[in-house]
Length: 375
Ligand SMILES: Nc1ncnc2c1ncn2[C@@H]1O[C@H](COP(=O)(O)OP(=O)(O)O)[C@@H](O)[C@H]1O
Ligand SMILES: [Mg+2]
Image (cartoon, rainbow, N blue to C red; front, top):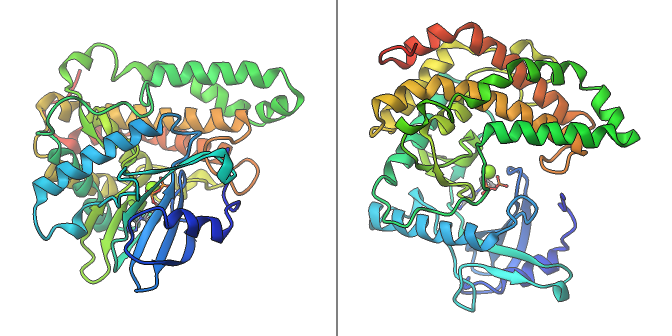
């Protein structure tokens, strides 16, 4: 459940004090850029700043696994990028007890896992990509991020959300949400407003298996970010460079087509994610081309089979996101943060409109991504 706004600043400062921040925390200001965790910028007497985050326990029921992954990811990048790379990677701040997180208990009002990063100063966060140049930089940064983990020593990272891109299973979850909604007046009310979307998803449900059946054995599982939004890149304020990839909660084994598809669904068009009018929700070939070029440049270790899977990734991920938004709408908006009624339904509509346009341009898009065309 969303809990934003319930923290009193004193409590946040007390939690900040449980980390090794060197001096006294004097201010904690909530940051509203993220959708999942609750984030606070903490400042200290001497002017040092940190990012304190409460891990969303609803989304991540096993925070120990999330933190075990993040410790390995951040250490790997530290070793790989070397001295002077501090602005290009996240750095965890240990808690006083030596762990890389701090656990509050019910005695502290509620049980939560908290973690702290050094704040990377003089950066900007962009909420929505608007130019091909930006899209290129973001796709290149996430492509590079994947490349950086080709030599992550075993064992594999934990799956922090099991079945995250198991699209057929996401559809089964939607089916269950539909049945559950039919059993209550409030659920029925939400279901009736989504009749057209329910039908549209039913018409496209066979797409869900594109990455899991047949081709799956050719596609290597690699470390992917799994939340490739422009708001998860810090841009250098001075140079505009895509400096650092953040938000590592879902970084885990997956398919390159997942990250590529995720970027297509969020950055290849000009519609707001929750636009009430879906006319802008269609793929813009110029944005798509910038995205493909940036990604292929950064993800330099892609195999030919992976390259051929990228457009399928776009179709599958766009459908999957429509399914997830619709499921959350039916469930009563428990997962994605909403500010108004029907926001998740509007988000679903945008994805479905985009899906139609991707299908209409399928051949062109495969040409842009290049490589031999699939049958
Ligand atoms: N180390 C950092 N330094 C500066 N800003 C950061 C840092 N980490 C995250 N941010 C900012 O905080 C926002 C939210 O953090 P993020 O980890 O993405 O949380 P969420 O999972 O809620 O999206 C990011 O979009 C970015 O603007
Ligand atoms: Mg984020």
